[in-house]
Image 1 (tube, rainbow, N blue to C red):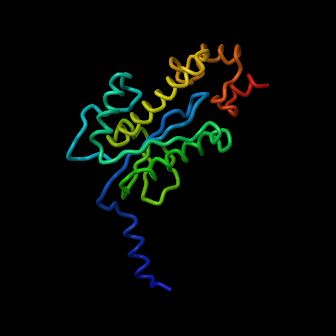
Image 2 (cartoon, rainbow, N blue to C red):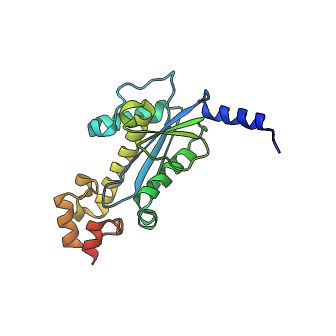
Image 3 (cartoon, rainbow, N blue to C red):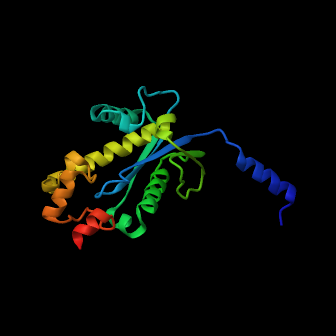
Length: 205
């Protein structure tokens, strides 16, 4: 049995931030009625800064695309992961989002000493983590993660639009717009619709 002195020292160490790599994590696609939820994790290089990082929702699509390429080129490492529609329907959207975030962190080539996550909930991780409300507007690494996740999901929507153009995914990105709801009523649900989301469930009745 270890001594109480050692145990207290170990606890104290865990409570303090340790120097090392910090990863930012964010997601895209919690609200839409279709498609995967996407998460990204990014460890930025302090010696190779990226100008103009911001909450992805505040940037134009063209600016996001440009920053996406710059982040992929300049970050020390980054990782993008998904939780599928099947996982969303099985687990619920919150748990599926946490799963995608965990996959993104675990996919990093370098292991961070701390993970900063946008929002007020944390996925289950084996490293120190902190949730930061509105982190995508405050922490550059989270901003970078939000951009990667958003661009990746928007590209998914564009690709899926080519398979199912009748739903208009390229325009509404899966959100429950009037156009999308009309297409759901006219054509029913496609394989990528989230069947546990109430607007989709109502169509399937």
